[in-house]
Amino acid sequence: MDRQGDMKIKKAVLITIAVLAILTVFLVALAVRQHKGEERQRLEKYQKEVSVEKAEKNTNAKGEKTSEETKKSEAKKSLEDKKTTEDKKVTEENTANNNGQAVAIPSGNGVTGGHIVCIDPGHQAKGDSKMEPNGPGSSTMKARVTGGTRGTTTGIYEYQLNLIVADELRDELTRRGYTVYMTRESHNVNISNKERAEYATSVGAEITVRIHANGADSSKVNGAMTLVPSKNNRYVSRLASASYNLGKSILDSYCVSAGFKNLGVQNNDTMTGINFCTSPVAILEMGFMSNPSDDTNMNNEQCQSKMVNGIANGIDAYFGK
Ligand SMILES: [Zn+2]
Image (cartoon, rainbow, N blue to C red; front, top):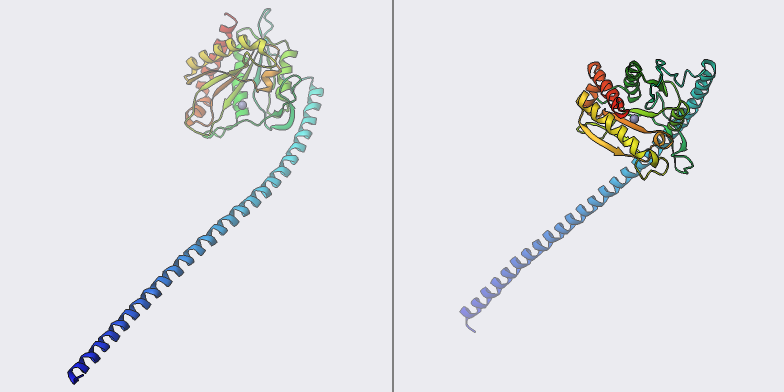
């Protein structure tokens, strides 16, 4: 080997070493980078797991809170039940003392042959969650009477509105020669739906008109409807046809007179206050207290007199007047 050849070999070896060194540095850098990436991924995964755990813990905490709230509300309810029982005692005493002040006296004008109408202003100041059968001989139990809904715009309670309209209707029907009975004439009573129906029977009512107002989740829902028993009702199917005529007659003239949207006559076989009736019955849902327009109109005096006239015209039409 000559000197020049030796130099060439040395140069080649040096270049090879340099290339290998660069390659090694590059590979190491690549490996480190990859490792870091995996680490980051692992960290992200861990963070995700932790946040899921946190969320679950929060949900559990909420669940515990809900059950705590339930306990509280149950305690409150039992207290209210106790109070209602006391109120009932007072009501019963009043009834005994005043001979039927709590369950209203007839306000007929004594006209012979005047048809007998029972008006039931729905609900009362305080609901009563104690149970009663849903119909004669039924094992299905429902709350004796519920608290009703409330105007989202006016803030007026349904039981208040129902009695305002019922009072006016009683006066109007009395003027027209009807004999009218009211299931209640004040708010602080405790009369169940079953008892209201039985009261109508006890006074010999030819029809019962139950005055209510509706509520819905959506504020857009509006209009009036009547609820009557269907032909398949287990207890009062014999009243279905006449009740439908009553419901249709009242609803149509009510909507024409007071300008509410007519949502039609609807069958309902789950109402205790219908199922215990022994003569035709209709529930008038005057409008939606959850709808600003209905709520405001129903609580407007001028509109109320149109509503009452409409109902009375409907009752006239039902009796063929
Ligand atoms: Zn109601």
